[in-house]
Every structure is written in C-alpha cells, then in structure tokens.
Image (cartoon, rainbow, N blue to C red):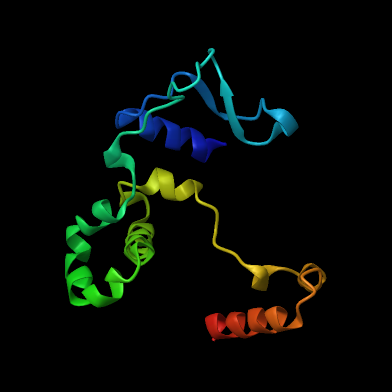
Length: 144
C-alpha cells in the first residue's frame, strides 16, 4: 500500500486532481485494492484528472533526450509499433531506479510474467501441449 500512496502523492505534487475518490483503498467489495467515491459523482463528470505530462505516451517517450539517438538510428524498427517506443522508454527509466522522474509510477507496476512462470498444474489447465512446450522453450532462451 505504501508504494501506491507514494504514487498518489507524486501525482498530486505534479498537478493531478484526485479529490473525489479515495485511492488506493481496501474499503472495496472483496477488500481488494481499488477506488471508493468520496462524493456523489454525476454521470459524465471526471472522477479524477491526470495532467498530460504525467502520461507515458509515444510523444512523451520520443522527447527523451537520452534515447533520441536510438529512436532515430532505429527509426524503421520503432515506426512499426508504438509499443516498441514505450517499451524502450520504460526499460530505460526502470534502469535509472529512484533517480527517474517516473519512479513512483514504475514502482507500482506488476512484474512481467507469463504462462512460463506458472507451475505445471496451472499450465496443464490450458489443455494445449504445444503452448506449454513453447513456454518452456521461451524460458530456456530467456534464462540462457
């Protein structure tokens, strides 16, 4: 919960307006992390407002001076899919650790995972032996 609170403080410090909801909150159905309205919020009215400068978009990423050369040198690779632009940016910022402007946000992201991280019993529920085999091959490549 502490990381989410630090993220909220970071958002508010940089102009986000989150005064109509309690987030993060465990006062939800099932006591899972979520948001709870503090006031009646009419239909069509924003629950919260996040300034554009706090959104990681391809435009935001392409403005990163430290990655400018990579984006230009491999322009063909990055022009295929905006996800590639964002992925490089996120990896770059993650490596900066707590010196990154985006650190509070990056800290609340879940660790990447996939079916290769599942125990065999979970994989068998997929009922697809070729997918299980591909997961094992992928993990072997990653761990090599």
